[in-house]
Length: 167
Image 1 (spheres, rainbow, N blue to C red):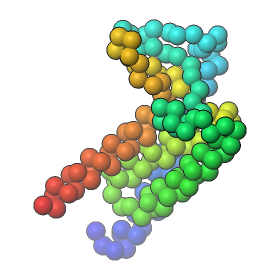
Image 2: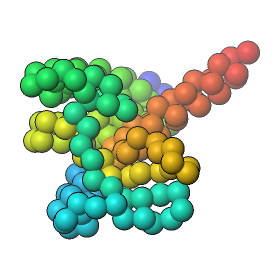
Image 3: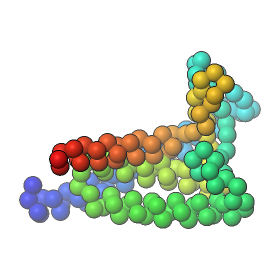
């Protein structure tokens, strides 16, 4: 690819990735609204399979409730941190020309924005997916969390494959 072709494709990739990020955030918000206002009215545990329930939970912290005890300043502090991380990821997204890296960043940005919207609106992130084995439950999570994990996984796999190719 020539230098000019690479420069002209960057804005297109960036624009598509940002659009997809907002779709991820929108799907996350729609799923949370549907679960909280339609399915979980009234709130309850809905068994789906022998290892999966639908539940309604609110996490004031980050992953697994970490930093959930920051008090009334917690949502603001975590929102500012999230905005800084999203800004960094958007810059990274602008600089990449790799479709896999852009896809990973798209998922992470979309998930982060989805959870940020919850935190700004409710002071906590809405979770509703509950996987378990016997009495041992994985902390409840949502579609935004899934998108973030998918994106981080893609970056790790891409990094591993790139380092293997370099050898």
